[in-house]
Image (cartoon, rainbow, N blue to C red; front, side):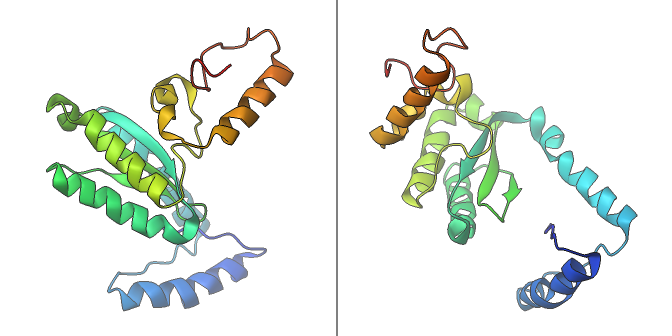
Length: 182
């Protein structure tokens, strides 16, 4: 699913009909242009329900982000990891900014492979110049994975911002920044 924006409806419909349709047709992908408001609304509703579809089957939903030009490579690397561990990793996201949501299924956790699968995807993300989270933040869930981020300057900047707005470290201590860095 590709969502376009433009100054006018004619602007983005023209984009879809020309450029995107051409690329999709070269790859033997069927093209349907949502040229009616209701059809667009139905598609956006479907997109907003992706998370709920996988929620009960997901052990962990990653929020990886890579530079947009290599997002397809990241998707392929995620598929390679899935094949290696005989699973599927449903992935969707925002092609325009390289943000991908990869759902590691509970079957992987049940086999005791969750940490390995997650870390391999993270490593591929970092190898492509990406980050562990691009949309939802580190929070409590990703704190234990923050040691994968080797850039000390990044942590110094974040701790500096935290200290500026929360000099006494009373606002959500231990959330969003790795422990023992302050």
